[in-house]
Image (cartoon, helix red, strand yellow):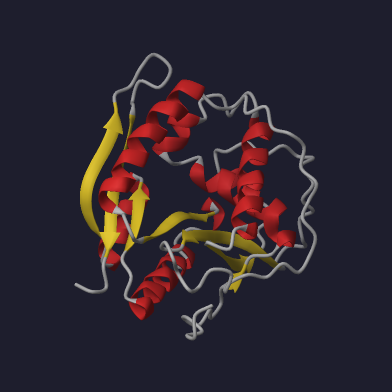
Length: 246
């Protein structure tokens, strides 16, 4: 484990198993606005329960993985938040909403540490209970779209992010946009990169690209796939890098 404590968390905190049900909702509601969501999860409206389950299962693995850091941001709960996202959240999904105005998770971010990082396992809090999640049929996903973009993305990652840490995901529920939560999460990761003098890569959709660029990331390549009869608009993302070493 590293000698340095890392950046101050401030209003952020380390994710725990108890956060998984809520963060799955935040992920679904936020990523629904990403072109990659439209490309990979073409059938979300028919099988929204599979989408939510997928993000929850992914978060379980991220929290357990010593090579990942997962932080969350909180705000006052808006009881009308479901009406402020085009994502579909099944009503009986296992998460119990708090009272209006109570603190609730509204954003999260996940970073993958660079190979050989001494910080593996440093930012972890396993207090709480992992939810029991059923197997996922992934009926919301287009398997061909997933396979094709995964291959494209993997190749780009190998070209540009070799030896770097990665900002794997960042999401804020739309009901709480423009309050600085996403910026705070991204800046924390950048400060960690600065302290450790390690480059950091991110694959950014159009919405996030502007934020990353303003904070100091630069585009190294754009990747994309042409549309088809299922998703005519296709998909594209920007491969971006922040290097505190200049």
